[in-house]
Length: 419
Image (cartoon, rainbow, N blue to C red):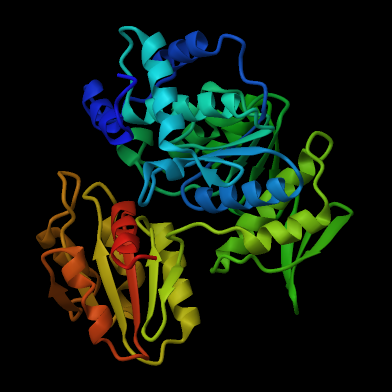
């Protein structure tokens, strides 16, 4: 097993467990206790929510590195390379480091079956300890309460947003989903909720947890200034530059990050210069990422209602002088009608294709959703993403091409366009 390549390890893991997803902490917790019975020493920041998690992880990582801390960040899914999930001081973990961690996990798990995600979570934590990091920044994969990341007690928590996503696992109401996401909160420890509207289910779960939660609009706020934006919490305020990542919603994400770092300042002091520089320089692939000019080409991982609304706002802000082309595909378990409705009136031509794999929504489903959202939508069908992307070379220079949908769409697009 130790001689396996990373791709061989991952292929084996996909077949190891009878289901792709099995929420719960018993199995992964048992393996972790055998792997590292001494526990986990680094400061732990857990980031949960529906949208914005990756951006907040990127902000936190960039700021804390500039403040002099050795960081480890864990995110999912990846866009192009599995190594993207595990980063040490901003750099992807090597194949060798990941394979060695997998071997250590396999050696102690004995007959315990682990999912692909659980294996990756354990590997990330194992590598972080091996690398002697100061701060671990962990993105929740699905929900919170029963997600493998939650096997560690977070020292601080950031919840970005709550929307209707993964309803088959988390519940079909915002309150039910909110309770699951609140499961990462810990008694007496600081947390931040980044949206002004808070589901009742989250408020109740937060009170039950005993966590000290700061809410946007109630405990802290942000406002725009001529040269950037101002963050305020009580009598403390900061003038900060706009984040380097595109989208108005990134200021909301940034404000939550600044609040969290303010709350943990006694244990993780950060200079104002590190805050400003981290916000300016943090980057994350696939979040309204511009990859070409003339025509402008953007890649985005919008695959639920809230993300599609945010993407629509970004497209409107461009004030496109030509036509807007959308290259789109999505998984069948995503709210395709909501996504289509959010963007239907902004797109001049839709370019649809069906992703590979059993999770992909078929062409009929894609086209049906668009016709319901906008019966006169102009739709072109393509056999693959590579075929659909040929339109980039055929567009007028004033046109804009937006490639979006599930993570697989964004990842493959970045590979094809070599971005």
